[in-house]
Length: 131
Image 1 (cartoon, one colour):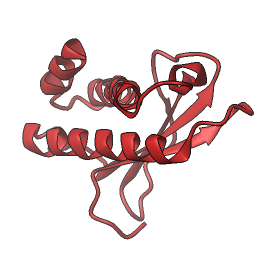
Image 2 (cartoon, rainbow, N blue to C red):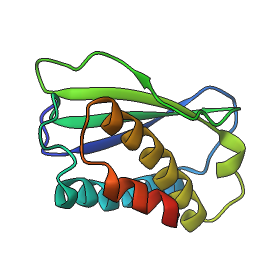
Image 3 (cartoon, rainbow, N blue to C red):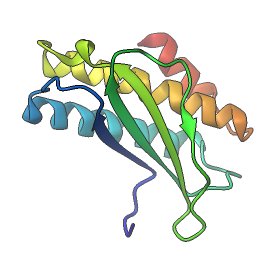
Image 4 (cartoon, rainbow, N blue to C red):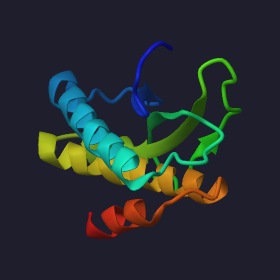
């Protein structure tokens, strides 16, 4: 994938629930942009064996406490992660509430990956505690 992103979010439906696309995309993009800046400023990726994180959020029925890992892509340096969230948390809520869900979910995944690869996770932990 040719881009300069350090964090990319995508969504995968595991249920037939329909999340309104406009507030959903705006909330996800806003959360991604904020967290990507935090990753850069905190030095999260310093010494990492990957260049960026691709996080697939699975819209399912449970909130997983840790992400699923795939192998780091040697071509573009992506660390592919996936984590399931309860889709009900995104139904009938405001764009701001959606952004909070994405932010917390991404932070959980980033902290787990950061700890696995011995990266700087203190700022990410601070942000999760504030959320």
